[in-house]
Length: 279
Figure 1 (cartoon, one colour):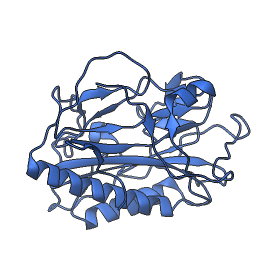
Figure 2 (tube, helix red, strand yellow):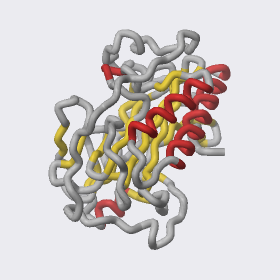
Figure 3 (cartoon, one colour):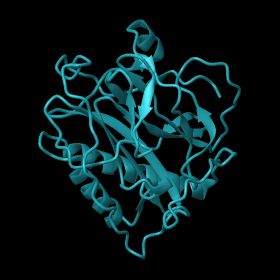
Figure 4 (cartoon, helix red, strand yellow):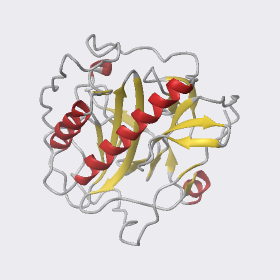
């Protein structure tokens, strides 16, 4: 697969680019996790939804015909709308559990299933990764605080297809930034996480190909009609991570802040179509 080198975000003001230092805040700790939310019987579910298993990644790329492309575009549009709504809820005093409940309700109202729910027994409908949490943060009762940063990762399963997207928010104001290139991460000595990658997405939540977000010489050729995610994770310090006892929450070992953006892409004759870009 050709090297993926950048992710685009909106232009930013100096205030938007404020980054707290690594240790001027208390460490993130597990909060209380409420029971998982119910899903109505009429909602179409992915195969793992009832069993709570952790399905192996499909070993083939997900390449779509015209009907599959249509459904992927629909799931991507819904994921983008849900993420925009989730971000509008970010403010001091709001808990990530409250965000999860609102996201769950919106997804269900639109006839879709929240893909993270019960995937490998993940207990919530969205991932919320605060401050030094790199990924897979479980929503809980910790209130967001002014100056926190949070990644909200939304995936919806609509009409048999997953749409997957995430982005960063500052608590009190939305996080945004210019075009980030991996060479800039190198220049400023930010770490690029290697243990977590982008992936094929479609009828399966995760599949081949594996998308690395650092310079590499791995083989691979993109195919017309193929869909996959690009989701680089940049950290303020070293890239070594710990996983909490919940077996999901990944945090930087040195408590450096972490940031991530994600889109689902479709390869077309004209290039890459961003399916999760808000219209």
